[in-house]
Structures are given as structure tokens and as C-alpha cells.
Length: 168
Image 1: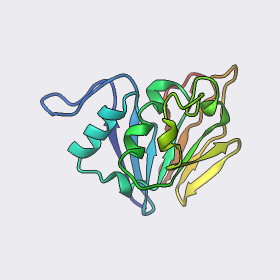
Image 2: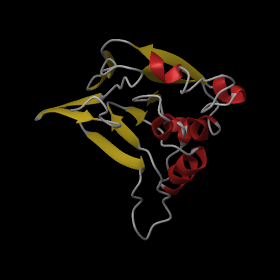
Image 3: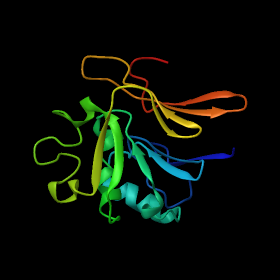
């Protein structure tokens, strides 16, 4: 098994590159013949720009896993949805869809006209995304539930975290 994790979006864009950095996170996890985008950053335009610069075809992303519904982790989703025919499965805790999340009202993070390009899959238990990639159930509470990605490796698990609001 070979895995590749590429940071597509974060607060510290690589110096002397055209990558755009802003609050938030987006990691592309390439494992088991599947591409999973873990979180999407805050700004749709920045995510789209960075995908272009890194020569990542948005249509090559098989799954989106959102750690939690805060804008700096789910706000860029529209930047991906605008560039695909869809639909793409979007796994996230149910709270991510709520009053501050993915589908608030007419769509705070995902405009109504793009909502049909995603299939929201609420995560409430352990989920196996591929042979070696898993998503935790939501941990924490009080509306700040967060899911983690766990990559199974020969040396042990690697935990990918969006924020770690509930601790490590």
C-alpha cells in the first residue's frame, strides 16, 4: 500500500509559489486507488485556484470528507462543486449540515444551485472509505463535533485532524 497526502490549502501557502493561503485546511489523500479531499478550506475561489495550480483535476476526486462544519473547513466546497459534473459523496457529521454548516438555509457554504452535485452522507459511526482509510465518528460535543481520518500504515495508524477541537 502506498499513500500520498498533499496539502492543497492551508494558512501557510508555500513561499515563492502562486498557491493561495488562507484560514482553513484541505488535504488530498490518495490511497487504494481513491482520492479523498479532507476538508475544503474557507474560500471556494482559493481552493479552485490551488487545485488548478497543483494540476489536480477536480473530477478525479472520488470522495469529500469534512471534519466539521466550520467555514474554514467546509466553506471551499462550492469551489470543487462548481468544477465537477457530480454528484460526489460528501461525508461529514450531521452537525456540519446544521445552522452554521454546509446546507444552512439556502446554502451558506453550498449555494442551492450546486447542492445537487453533492450527496450528503452523515457520519455517526466508524466508516471505511477504502481498504486503508477510515473516518471516525464525530467526537466532542456542543455543536463542535469533529471527525478524523485515519490512515492504516505498516507502522501504525496516522491520524489526520482538521482542528482537534476535542483534543488529540
